[in-house]
Amino acid sequence: METKTTLVGFSDASRRSFLKRSMLGAAGVIAFPQLLLPRSAFGADSSPNRRVQVAQIGIGRMGTGDMGGILKHPQARVVAVCDLDSKRLGIAKELVEKFYKKAGEAAVDVKTYHDYHEVLARPDIDAVVVSVPDHWHALVALEAVLAGKDVYCQKPLTYSILEAQLLRAAVLAKDRILQVGSQQRSGASFRSATELVRDGHIGKIKTVQIGLGADKPSGKKPAPQEVPANLDYERWLGPAPQQPYMEGRVHPQNSTGARPGWITTEDFGLGMITNWGAHHIDIAQWGIGMELSGPHTIAAQAEFMHDDLWTVHTTYHVELDYAGGIKVILDNKNEVGIKFEGENGWIYCTRGPEKVTASDPNLPTKGKAQKPALRASDPKILQAKLSAQAKTWQASTNHYFNWVDSVLAHKQPIAPVAEGARSLSTCALSWIGMKLNRKLTWDPVKETFLGDEEANALRFRKPRSAEFDITAIAKKAGLC
Image 1 (cartoon, one colour):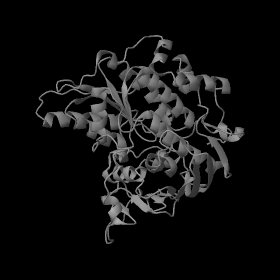
Image 2 (tube, rainbow, N blue to C red):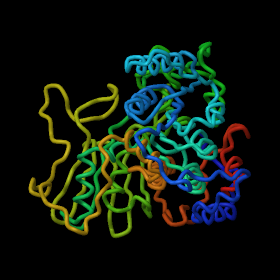
Image 3 (cartoon, one colour):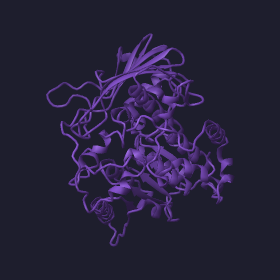
Image 4 (cartoon, rainbow, N blue to C red):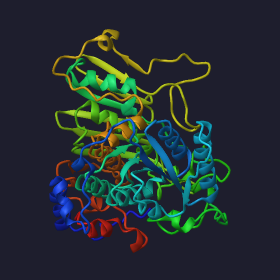
């Protein structure tokens, strides 16, 4: 990735205009060419007879899982699937049709699409699940919102900070429901930990220690390959820089469940800092009450892969300073999870022992004693009752169901766009600190670096062609 990135078509003046507009709420809808009244104008419909018509955009490791989660909701109906790989598209169609036939339906016809714009043009589709690679998240989700669709978007919300701001503004202006795929917000250990921390059960928070695990080099040098006939690779690149095809930097051709190479290729994803960072930083900011803010200083360093198939960071150390004297520390040597350290003890939370892939971090498995996913310096802390004034979260044990239910009721989900944008922002700030290897000062209100043009330029990446210019799309829609 080029480090001399510029904010294409987005001057400081237009940025201020965008921020002003994004604070105006649904009134911003009047700037759109067509007036699309939000469903809330007619009243939410959560009756048992209503169905949310859903399209799955992106079929891979996460897309297959996301689609499976949505299929299980009794009031959701997957009616279309979309992907740039025809092989994966066929697999998805078969999975959905098989699911409904197994439920007793005689004839099922799930439509397939190569171009997501055709999906968005269907008026009978209410919502879309966006499970494409990270560098495509913003474009697909923003255009879906502008088309009047509700959205479930895989984490991280977007690839860059400016993309997250634009998507946030679109969701607000169009009055849509967007759930970020930060499913840890629906996990018991994370919910309990953050509620106890915010209720003061370990006293004033001093530090938060985060472990994400670390990516390792593949040990292979980059070698261009012939593009498979079933993959539209030029379209797959989208806004990313032009480059030769390598299966190891895209996704495996013989599996939809294996870890894709784009997740460790910096042109398409920023590595562990956004991969697992989007989960754990999200929970950390939730716990310290900064889910709508961010750090004011960033000090980061990292090692990056060189002369390898992959390009992201390996080892890393990041220190983030927040208001109130709270320091958040990310280090690849930390135990994977989030440890809140207060004046009167600590609380640690993580996932269970399951692994998504062999390369993903998790708790020890075979042959090692399992530690609880939720633990504290004193077990009594975890048994404490929350005060009457405690900040508690809405009920959610199934992240997909929470989204569908939120769409039906037209209410905010457990992981809304405004908070997902801030989680992505902090991940990206850490990555920018890694790239520049020096201390940075950030204004979390204005969402800009102070007196640092080089750092500010990294808030966004110039797309390789006008076709993928998200700022132009946002301007045309009246968002900035």
